[in-house]
Image (cartoon, rainbow, N blue to C red; front, side):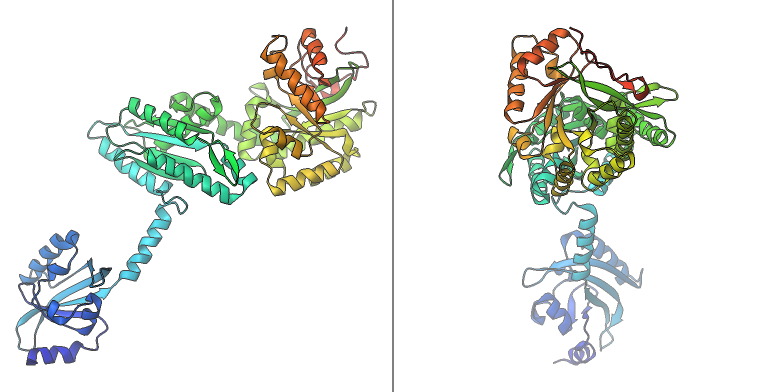
Length: 555
């Protein structure tokens, strides 16, 4: 062993950090045991080899420039992180610090110290993945996608190019999640993400934003026409049936496309695409919608309506009108449906179609529902001569966690009303998507003696089995079908078939939208029990109800 080797070995043999001496030409002249262990190599495999032989190719240029500056005494030290593959073909991340030094004989050397930072790097990588990638699908998340989109927008401006993005959403995801469980919901999201990824072209970027919402940034140079054609294909692919937990699910997908302008930020471009996607969901026709300024105004209007509705609840701008439901056999009023109205100080009377969806999205449907319930109980309390029921529309957001059974118990007690005087109307989707918690609430409600009625029967996607498996007392045939009464074709066949099903199931049926005596006669012939519509009476405030005993309609 040479004097130089002996001196070096004595100095560094017990050092926990990998250490080496480098000649001025960059070759190794000596190494310590810690560095040998890190490389997984013997000294003979390292000594006299150039340091660049062990560096990752991406780090060579930087390391070479810095090393030359060190050798030429332009700098006294430098540090960089690099990776290499050890003898076990594992990637090892190291932090390398190199300074001036000399060996035992006084020859100038560079002293390199290598710290193994593999665990630190892995932890940082994991943290970065958790903050920038969706853990369920492995796709980039909203934060990462917006950063990529921001870069794309900055690059597009000098080139006078546009960036095209597609927002994708599944509007029946919550139903799967609540009815089949979160495991099935997760499986659906994974399947959808794979379907989208399968349709990607080189340069595209797809991300999962939240829930069942995805965003696709098309590759640079994609034309609007091409983006639209591909979007239609992707949405069609998303709507292919999938079997989950033994159930065949048909996802309902919609897409919205937005094209960048010089004024767009990443956030506003995505917002425009999402606004167009919401318009697709709302239309029920187009699977993909191109953004227009009208879509942005619609979103702004919704936010404005939400703010004003909050104020309306506080300042008593809301009222309830009651529309009669008539027994077709006797022509007498058997019930009233409670319908919320909003007496806006500027816009005048606002009808449910304009503010109920906003109330649903914002959660205001819960206090609004309690208000309608109180007015319905007030009607029954103030008019003991009326012995029928009041039908009240209920959102699924009022059931389950909101404990509708407790709300009803309190309201009925406050107004001293029998539970049998109230019936609750739910949509088909509301029946299908009942979670165990919601179903327990519905069962508690029926045990109280309150009847459940399916509203808009036939317009949703619940099976007849779903209706029969739930505690349903009645169903309502919507105007979409009653308006076709008398066509002697599909309209009459549907009405007759549904009335037959209702009777066979031991339920009662209410046909809505009856406006003519001809429709009344046909509804009676088909076997419907009750009718509702302008022929039977228009909605009116409580104080204007007369509780007439004469037959409706006059025959």
